[in-house]
Image (tube, rainbow, N blue to C red; front, side, top):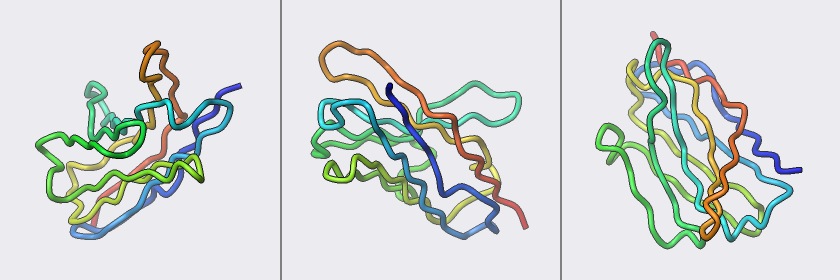
Length: 118
């Protein structure tokens, strides 16, 4: 059974930092492209960052470029999202997504809440 478990969310003041983790099990981790999405109340889920299956390539939404960094440790089956200079508009539930690089099959985590507020 595939499981993606996000952690690291919480309440942080504007300008602060958080590091999210996504721990995967039940899949061949190094065959999956991992993405972070977020969904704010009343809004559609949006892509935040993507990292290739071996970690060589990354891509970011314009809104987070220069502030967020995605990385992965395939030995630990874990992907990270380092979020710096957080803004209130970053408040959302953050979800981890794993997509098989060949079949395209997708799996989702349950999400972790990030709240940026003073």
